[in-house]
Length: 139
Image (cartoon, rainbow, N blue to C red; front, side, top):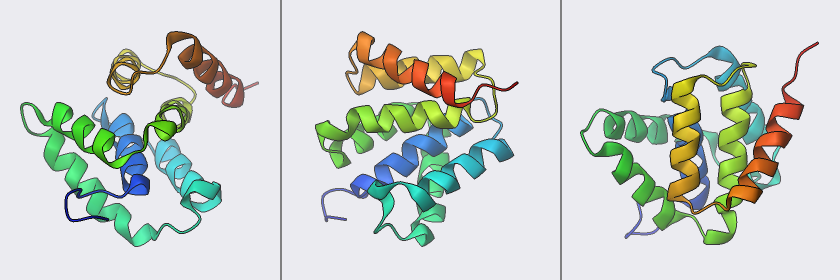
């Protein structure tokens, strides 16, 4: 973490996952388990100290309570993340949204906002979304 950014790149990814989970005002167990699974298994989080999750969560929740808090959150995320990780961030957001087997209207709007804020190309976004859908299908 640098003095000019309150979030590390890994913190920014965690913040986005938490924001997507909280977007419908219900953080489901499946979403929390997915976030934990991502933190435990993906190489991008190999050196991440999970003890930072409560701090990042608190930051997200405080921002989401403010009138322009979502814009501020996206600003923090964009400032902390190198552009080459924007698609990674979107993929993680999709995985969290799909973790409970359904993406409601509010979560879908949040993912649309993420696409816009991170300038994710529509074709790339569709491929990422299709992969998440495939991974979280049920029988």
